[in-house]
Each structure stands twice: as structure tokens, then as C-alpha cells.
Image (cartoon, rainbow over all chains, first blue to last red):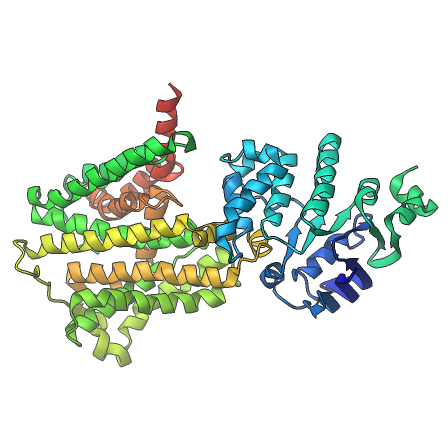
Length: 237
Length: 349
């Protein structure tokens, strides 16, 4: 397998405060990688750095090309779909319009309706709500809409920021089942940032542990999950 | 703007046609098909009404209706920027002024036909708007409002500058010759300009409608609702926002040119901040983000100050203020929200 994303010596700061102290990590094509860590560890900042939303230094290679310093929209056009925390739903538009927005930078407009139908197959609940204003959806439905909308970009890589945030346990379970299926069927590579370490380790191939802006541990997800320290600090048993 | 004073009939002219369309225009998706046909029917009926109206009304009323449409075009332009793209502007009087002066100078000094002054005015304003929109990208909300305020404040003085006097006529302004109806049509000048404005307005309105329902329109609204999410879907927000500014200025510039032609006169003090605020008021009372509301907004902008003056000469400003507050109280989200409420009440029963 080839490397889809390689991050080298990534540093970022907000004003005077340095948030990332030289991260190194990489993502396999077609795989699911998770970035674990407590509040304030720098997980969200890492995702934002990849999609050009924060100033940073170092190297971010996407398919071998440095994308550091590119604008957010250019990174998206290369096929990196960012699903931000809080979902970024367009509340005043309908579910379908939200999905169409996801495909707005695509040139192959003739395939878009087909892809929308495909999303409705993956997320039957969204189909029921097709013409409903997205702001009236439940939290779980909005998260599903955010994922479906990101898929409309036909991304090579999906960046998911806390997909389980604020959702009921049952909904979270359903969501992760869908993510697993999407990874398999749509061949979408994923980088998932999560506080819910048990869930994330459950679907990930590789895992990185982030503490106050540095990676302190990395390896196959199974191995990380079995580590005693990780278990105690992040899994709680 | 209007040099005339009296007020007549206005309300049922300014409000009812578009009002009626609104009632039909909003039904939700389930009945989309039937609603669509009905809406088209109403649209055509209103159009027919608009076409026959000048035959039954006095010249002065025709002039007022024309002015209403001119304001409506400017408000549609502002709506594209504010209602659909979420950018504020207190500077649209400047674009209106540039459009008006472009028409006046081209007609009186270059001898260009009035028809051709419209696209020229529009393109000049598009370029100016786009260029102004670029630095404005860094400004949001109230800061953008302040920057555009500066534009509005500076414009009348720039128009009075002595180095430009040769072109602009300085404080005196420029008097324009009113065009006659072409092709030997049996219409007087006011009637012809009414039809001319109606056709131009219709084209611009339909273009705006198409735009907001297109992919581009969705991108504009995405930027308005959530700029960060829009960017992470690959929308080039800078380009869209600057273009929205340019397009908005285009509409306002064309309106300015039309306004100059029908009033037959341009002078710096017609284009002060008051006009900018007037556009904003018209936008809000018509309904932010609802295009047909512009016609109501235009009528409001033209007639309500006159009504206020009729009520009390000395306190017209205060009366205007009270009327405005009353309208905002009754229709907090403009005519658009008001009609939506009525429709949902009727449907509820």
C-alpha cells in the first residue's frame, strides 16, 4: 500500500501559543487512521492544518505533493473532505440541497443525481427527510448529512472531527457501522479524530496518540488498544 | 430622487401584484407541480396588468411607477449581495451614482443612445464593485458596513470636485434630454420609459432568479450561512464574494442609469448616504432574501416619505420613522415573512 498522506514535522501555533510541536504521521491509501487524545491535545488543529485553515510549518504531502500553504478550497478540490466538529450543516437549506452543495466543486455534473441517490441508499433516514430543512434534523441525522455531503465530493481522503460528539450511544454505534461500510464500499480513506477511543480503535487500522501537541505513541490500532497505559487513560478500564 | 411631490394610488399598485404572486409562490414541495403552474399563471397575469396599466393612469403616476421599478432593480442588486451572500453595504448609493453619471455623461457629452448607456453603466459598476469587494473580503458584518459607509460618504464630494467638473458639471449636475419612443410607437416619453424600464427590470429580475436557484446561487448562500464549511467543499469564497459585490453593483448601476434617464437630471446631492440607507430599508421591508420583495421595497422608498410629508410638513422625518417602526412591528421579516405567515394561516385552517 502506498502512502496517501504524509505529515512531517508539522508545527502550528495560535498567536504566541504553540499547539503542535512537530508531528510526524502518515496514512495508508484506503485505510482508517485515528488520532486519539484528550481535550486540547491538538487533534482538531491537526485536521485544520491539513485543510489549510491554520497557519503552520513543516510538510504535508498528499499523494506525494506538498499541500501545506494551499487554500482550504484548493485542498478540498484535491479530494480532501473535512467534516468539522459541529458538522457545518447549512440549516436553512434542504437535505438534498446540502448534498448538492457537497458536489459544488465537481465538474462531472451529470453524475451528481446518481451520487445523491447512492447517499440515500447509505443513509435511508436522509432520504425520508429529503425536502426537509437541514436545521430541523436531529443531531445524529445532521452528522450523517455531514458525512454524506462530504462523500459527494468523491473524496480521496475524509477528515472526521469528533463524529460521535453529542450523539446518543445507539446513534454513535450506527454511525460507526456506516463509516466502516463506507470505508469498504466507497474505498474512502479516513482520518478520524475522536475522544471516544474505544470506538475509534474499533474501526481503525492505525492509531496515533496525541498529547499536548506531540505524538507519544503510534502503531496498529489493535496494539494501541492493548497497551496498558492507553487502556487506563483513554479507555477507562 | 423624484422632483415631484404628490402621492396617489400607489399602495395597490406597488404592493398587490407582487403580493399576490408571493401568496402563490411559497407553497412547499408536496404541491410543487400545481403550485408552479399557478405561480406561472399569476406571474403572466401580473405582467399583462403591468403592460396595460399606463393606458389607464396619469402620466405622473406612470412616472412614479417607473421610479418604483428603478428602485426595485437597485434593491434586487442589494438583495443579491446582502440577502443571498450575507455581505452588508451602506455604499450602494455610490454605485447608483456612478451608473447615473455614466448614463448622463455618455448621453450628453458622447451622444450615445440611452439604451447603450445601461450596459456600459452596469459593466463599469461591476468592475468597481468587484475591485471594492476584494479588499472588503477581509471585513465582516459591521466593519464591512463601515467601509461601505465611507464609500457613500465620499461619493457626492468626489462628484463635485473641480478637476472633474468638465465631465460631471460639478454642483450643477447634468441635465439629460428625455428620449422619445422608437419605431413610431404611439407612446409619450413617460409611457415609453415605463415600458423600457419594465422590460429591463423583467430581464434583470429573471436573471437574478435563475442565478439564485443555480449552483452559483447555492454557493453564494452557502458562503452566507457557513463560510468555513463552504470553503471545505471547495467553494472559492474570495472569488464568489467579490463577484457578488460586482454583480450587485452591476444591478445598482443599471438602476442608476435608468433613474438618471427618467428623472432627466443628475446632481451630486441626489446620491448621498440617505439613498443607501433607503435601499437597505427597501430591502428589509420587502424581505431579505426574497427577490419580488424589491418591488414593495421600491414603492416604500418612493412613497412613504411623501406620505409622511402629507401628514405633517414640519415633522415628516418623525412620521416616516413612526411608519417604519409600525411596518417593522407588523412585518418583522418584511413583506416576505408577512405573506408567508398569511399563507401558513390559510393553509392551517
